[in-house]
Amino acid sequence: MELRLYDTLSREKRTFVPLDANNVRMYVCGPTVYDFAHIGNARPVIVFDVLFRLLRHLYGEAHVKYVRNITDVDDKINDRAARDFPGLPLNEAIRKVTEQTGKQFHADVDALGALRPSVEPRATEHIAEMREIIEKLIAGGFAYAAEDHVLFSPQAMNAANSVLPHYGALSNRSLDEMIAGARVDVAPYKKDNTDFVLWKPSKPGEPSWPSPAGIAAQGRPGWHIECSAMAWKHLGEHFDIHGGGIDLVFPHHENEVAQSCCAFHQQRMANYWMHNGFLQVESEKMSKSLGNFITIHELLQDWPGEVLRLNMLKTHYRSPIDWTMKSLEESAKTLDDWYRVAADVAPGKPAAPVIEPLLDDLNTPQAIAALHGLRGGDVNALAGSLRLLGFLSESNAQWEGRKQQASGVDAKEVERLIAERTAARSRKDFKESDRIRDLLAAMGVAIKDSKEGTTWEVAR
Ligand code: AMP
Ligand code: ZN
Image (cartoon, rainbow, N blue to C red; front, top):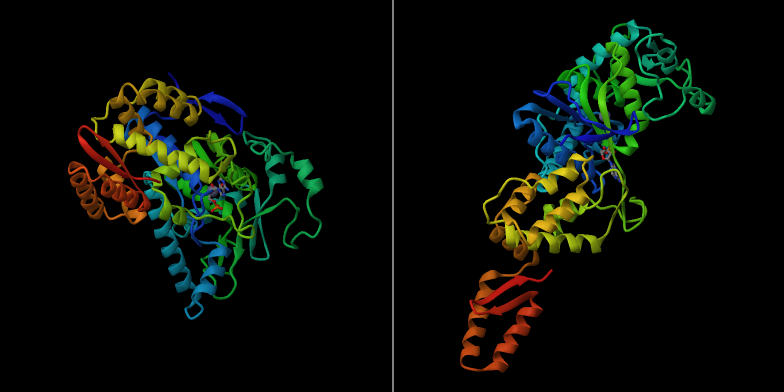
């Protein structure tokens, strides 16, 4: 069966045909590293990790290249650096912020069971490529320098009579409407109010680099140009899949397409544009002011990363997701059960009923329903399928052990109490055995008696 993916540009599900089946190429916009990533940021990480794993399954591990960038030059980073390290020179403070946040991001997404991308390029290491693209755009008449800025002109792009796509095609907006609706108090260096920044001057003390030809002052890149440069460097002028959250369609991705297609005279930047829907928390938009802003780091204090992963995949990636405590609890129960029956068996081939829905535009809810179907039957296929989806990274004993640790239950103490209870029962001291059972329950431990003896687990 073939893979079909929904493409934001053509607004339809299309059969996925890679440009080169020996080198399937995907780019996903990564984080701006200035703070802990929130659970909304985890959504593209998990969704595109599932796609990465599926592509590796279909085309072979060595034949898929996944690039996810790190944005390490940004006003938010500068502000955070000045606030957190007021005693340091700004550039040093910035390095501290981006290093710390980058490490934290890796710890978070590793815990979510996401494979590391093939390449994780940093914006600051691709300034030369950005300059080169900007110079091409100026030479082609798509961009111009003014007051130490370089601006891209969507109107010049749409006036060009060539293979180029139309500015606005990805986000389904008309440039004429944008022109009519644009604000009047436009920056003085812009010729038209729809022009956007490719390069800008740095303020004293801010990070700065030599500017594109024709500009004397040092400067720094705009945000959109970063991704055009990093995608070009690592994936070429035209590649297969470009992804990110739905909020990035406009202006970020529209501008990436404009920059890359105009610089390289291409009709397309990526053949498939994929966007995950937004995540909200307990039916409300997540925001710091509402007090419902949750970081991945905080959630990982209470839940194993695989629980967060399963909880995310229960909703189709294009639908909005409502992140609730109730759903998390259910996901935890499901995983406890899967660990019990499948973590320690030999993994079989991933099952067709799990793969088929994934091939239909990553229908993970249906794949999860198929996993439930395997639960009572072919547990080897269940184990293989779960592994393909990034679950069962540890044994059942390790899983249970971590649960006990997280709940603060001392396994040795529990074993000792159970032995005492068994002894009490064998001398028919039921008052004492009931007392111990209640004591264990109060500790959050549930016990189960069977012919083989007494087993226990931490009740969540
Ligand atoms: P940012 O660091 O804000 O650029 O976001 C990094 C990635 O997370 C981008 O792909 C965003 O589209 C995505 N993202 C941010 N907030 C959410 C959210 N609430 N739900 C889903 N995706 C999000
Ligand atoms: Zn990007």
